[in-house]
Length: 259
Image 1 (cartoon, rainbow, N blue to C red):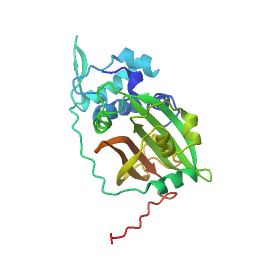
Image 2 (cartoon, rainbow, N blue to C red; image 1 turned 60 degrees about the vertical axis):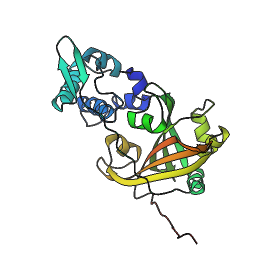
Image 3 (tube, helix red, strand yellow; image 1 turned 135 degrees about the vertical axis):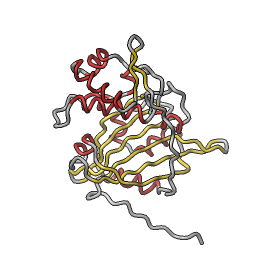
């Protein structure tokens, strides 16, 4: 498997050390489980040893062992004496259904009329479903951008995006100064098609903290795929996942039939 540093972001690693009511072993177990379920850690991959997990995440070996025990109990991994622990879960990509076409001007306007805090801006290996959608190889990286948008001091949206095809290096300051669409244009990425899927989810511990709400509270979930067309071929260049606080953000559309 890829090294832990290439799979998990700094925010995810730091979250394990935060003082929360959730047991540390369960947070480590959840982090590893989600990476197995979304295909970031492939079927058949050898997991790090308990000692390696303890050193990487800064936890005790007992904590690492309990997290691995939970994964084994759910048949996500299999332990064999002398051969280590291997992932037994087979990731199967699920089709994304996104019938809603977003208006880029409205997206950009919202970005300009809200405050942004950039938490992550780094090239990492995306989860398997994102790699497949972006047409990347198993070890190819994309730009991961994690942001929180606020209005009047109240956070309303938690954004995680994976972007391929940016020709030049970008950093946190760029995304604090310019909208993503402005940066795309500066890099020669011309968005020609946007699809979206909207659903609802319960807030995880991290989302509840970032959006100033309670664990398990309902959130609006939006998945946005942005495409560009070159030489007559449409390619996905950006995968965006947003979680909105429903009391501070409403998604409204005004649709008309073509004349």
